[in-house]
Image 1 (cartoon, rainbow, N blue to C red):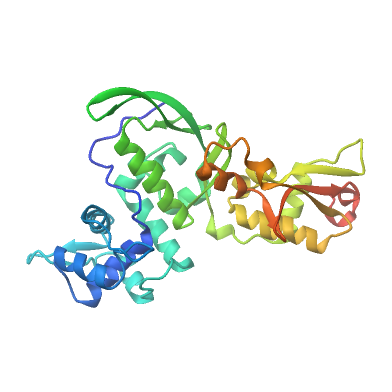
Image 2 (cartoon, helix red, strand yellow):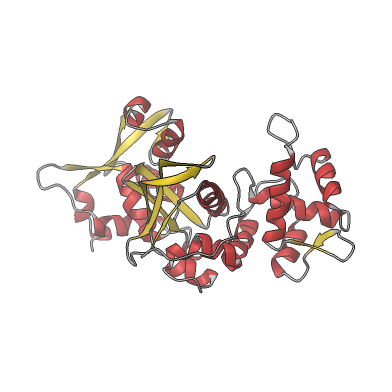
Length: 340
């Protein structure tokens, strides 16, 4: 069922990366507290609030960045109306200690932000509850027990510029519990599809796999079980899949295999690609081969350049050639070392 969600929780925005939120915290800590205009001005001067080409961000994106740092409780306002580091939070101490100013998030910072997002009641209530089917849970619960969530297109009536229009939007469905979220307003789409979903991927809390509109999922990653040993990955593959009875070699689509294996093991797409497909090809050349295809063939049904990227992410590019299938010799199942 679809659960009622209280108003006022959709403050998450597009183009507000978590690395920028960390930089706001470190900027404020560097100057021992700053007023709003000082954060904006110094943030532009020091490269936080600038676009890739070097132009400064507009006032609205800067406002949303500072507001997000406040909403995630990394900073707070004191009695002098200055923004200061929120030293009540353990995660703030850790981010300040790491001091990775103007750098991409590293593994430690990703784990810190995972816990910040899950601990935040608005983030849980707006989106992350759908993986659990309930609103009270911990980070440990989420990475161990969170379910796969399907993303499906749905037509709804949406109000745009004071007019009601029928528009395509997204429906998030927990197939196990039946719970769902339908993004019914532009602000919900902004907060969930382009805010929380991107944050979850930036800090490796969740992974997304897009095959096509009807096979599109997000699922929790478990950093405690990663990286998996190649032997464990191969063993799981041989347990789940069976060889063709009509040929010595069996073809398995790389994208569909990833679609099934990655969420089952709670690991990223890249981990399956690098630690299983490529490693198997290197270690077992007598048993493993690839077949290839052109980029155009892989994306000709794609809806846009954005979905092109999502589709291609599930294949392997090797020596500038797109590998589409892993071809496995049937003897691999017969080899004693890998027998069930």
